[in-house]
Length: 315
Image (cartoon, rainbow, N blue to C red; front, side, top):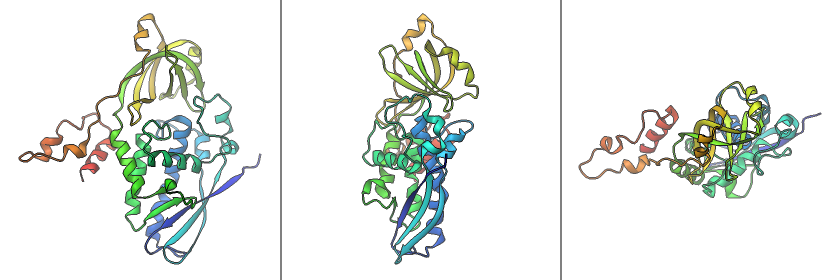
C-alpha cells in the first residue's frame, strides 16, 4: 500500500530576519527540535506517555517521521517552513489492530501534527485533567520560550489563525504553570482485572473493583509472559504518574503477579503527593536565606531533569 503523505507547516513570525532568506539562527532551533516534539506527541497519543524506557517501537518512529521539504516567505517578518508527514494508518497499521484503551485515541487518518495541536490546545486552555500531555511534554512546551527568545514572536502550526495552535510566550507560560502543579510520581501498587494487552505498545488496561479503568505501561523488556494474566485479577507495582489535577494518568509498571485476597485493599486509585513550588519557596522572608528557604524541597531521588527544572524556576 502506497504511503499517503500530508503537508504541514510552521509559520515563523518575528520582527526581522525572516522572509524568503531567513537567518539560520532563527530557523535552526525550530528544525532541530521538531522531530522530538512530534515523537513525544505521538507517544503521548498512543501510550499516554511522552517518554518511555527502552527501545521505541518501529511503528511509533514511523508515525513521527517528519521530512522538511522547503520554505517560503515574503518581506522580513514571516517564514513558512513546509514538511510532510505520513498518516498513522499508512505506517502504523499494527497500532490499530488491537483494541484501544481510550476513546479519544489517535485515528488512522490523523498525523503527528494533529496530536501536537490537540495537546497545544489543552495546554493553552490549562485543562488539568487532559490525557494529551504529561510532565515531560509540558517541559518541552515550556522550553520553546528559549527558541522564541532568539528573535521570534510566535511559531504558528499549519499557519492557523487560531491562537490556540501557536508556540508563543503565553503557551510556554501555561505549560510551565501546569508543570509546577503536577504532583511528583510516587511508587504505588494496584489490584484489578487485566482486561487488555497491547503487545506492540507494551500497554496494559486494568479495571479496578469499582470499574475504574487504569492505563499501565510495562517497563520491562519481556512482554510475552503477561499473556497468561489476561482476563484475571492481578496486582501490579510501579511508578504512578499524575495529571496537574491530581488524578492518575498512568502506572509505569515493573512488576506483576496474580492477585490474592489480601490485595483487594489496593483496588483503589493512588493519591498524589504534595506539590512543591520551588519558585514560591525562593521568595524568602526578611532575614532568611534563599538556600534555607528551599532546603528539603528538592528530594535526593529526583531525576536529573526534575532537578534542572527546579533550578530553572529559580533563575
